[in-house]
Length: 68
Image (cartoon, rainbow, N blue to C red; front, side):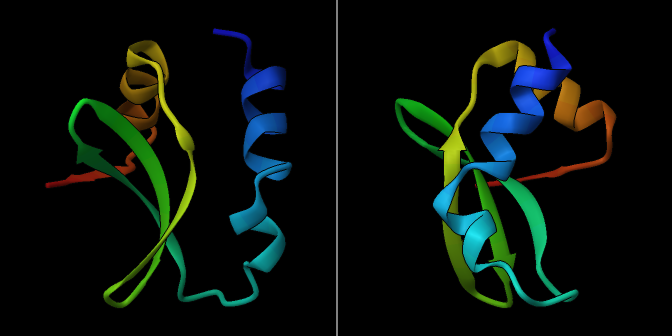
């Protein structure tokens, strides 16, 4: 996996530009047929970007939770 490109995708996303709270965290959410990375604060989800399967696996290894 190209980590530099992956981190640039996260940093350049509109959700990250709006992120301003330490209480916000990342989650992986399924919206068939897509898998997305979301920034969550309580019950609000801000889409960051769609994930590839290998990116999802890497994020799971880093401790990012899956929600359905």
